[in-house]
Length: 536
Image 1 (cartoon, rainbow, N blue to C red):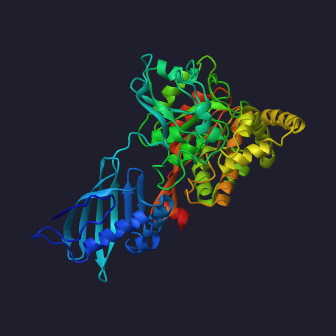
Image 2: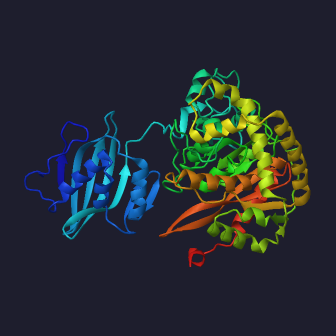
């Protein structure tokens, strides 16, 4: 064993000399400090030289595990330079002549200790990291996930089935005494403190839950990626380096990370179902109007619906029962439908898994009409309402919004009264037609068109995935139907890596609780397809 103490400068190199009488394999300490310098300087070429090449390389932290040197390289590229820190103590444990374990105790400039553990291997006289596990100092709260956290922020006001459950509230709902930020710093700064708490929040408090904090959202909830340029991208624990999905990105990440039991959010065009799918969660968009939207910052009221994400069905069921009027809920027969034009929008492997999974369910094939036409009607009315909700603010604050969100508002500003009126007329006809074609059946479809894209994906790829996913998700919004995403698939990505994907059940209006029962039974009945069968 060797122990080395650092000098006084953050990130400064510790002398390679070990204490008297102790040794480390030749060249190892020098390689360790070369790696530290490269991390702090974001020197990708040097880092590649110091990372063992191949599929056995592994990097892990609290957000997940990345395997394979190519994926580790991509992860480091996304992250940029490492945070400045000081190596307080360095320990070395030789394993054999060409392998050693290195443990570094770190401290940040602002205090707090972390630990980094690395397995180094020597090949051809050169040392490289084969395995690394990073445990940074614990943060009070990750601002990419949480805007505000308490202990709790709001205690429970009643006793019931949600006793001791914690809630992450999307930053669109009013909470008495707090401001609503809608994912935009400047909007937050100008918002008044709420005089009361939104009914959707109160229902959970009255059932015994407490509000742990206010969680992040995409700017004005006008996106489904989960990337907020002002606060950062919440981690996706199920897919390291993957987008979390939005716009209920903060609540979903808080739930997936185990920091909250329930994520309270909204779903306009997939904003609960997409993050649920990307992160392997349960997510329910309720029947439009079934849960009060009072005290909620709107995006497009014609489509905005309240809902929740959870890690399990029982918690989701309890949240739904606490919030929905049981007198309005109706029974639902176990009869299924699928629309080939919709599930055909999914990426090939996911599409194959979906079709294999539902093949035994006697799902009737239905034609829902031109999908592109449905989406255009949805998109036009959504944009017109988004501009009515926030256009005045956007005009007063040029340059504040992310490029993709700003472009959507710019397009929304061009929709005149006649275009909106025509789209609304077409939308109402389409809604009636969708309900008629489904004839009381549960529509089965992929919750999203793909697994979570990487944060490094090109803008063109993100837009392609978004366009397909929005076409899948808009059907429920157009007809005001409840939609449940269940964690159904583990999609192989290659190299032994897989990612979750959801299966959506879209039911008739006010069948929210019945959908949960059917979804729970369906999860246990879905056939499991081996990855080898799909990848050949």
